[in-house]
Length: 56
Image 1: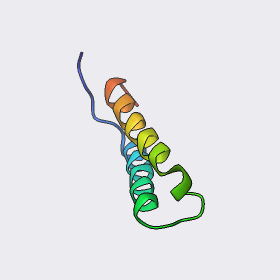
Image 2: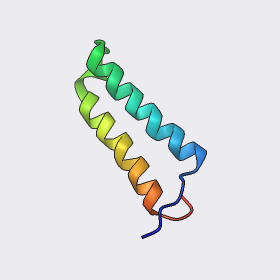
Image 3: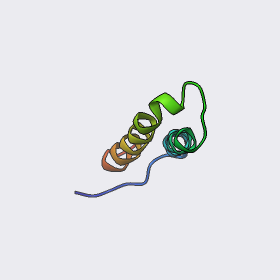
Image 4: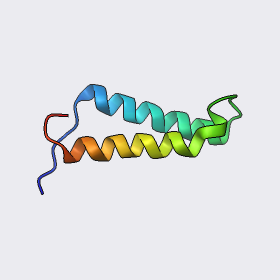
């Protein structure tokens, strides 16, 4: 299996979700804090899938 680098836009979305998840765990943010782990997991999942698929 050959890994490829994700596009900048996909990388930005994944990192943004990850940062929101971390901030939601550290600071109380109304919607974000409730789903902090889910946001972090989705961000990591998007990043992992984009590395596995070519052209994403």
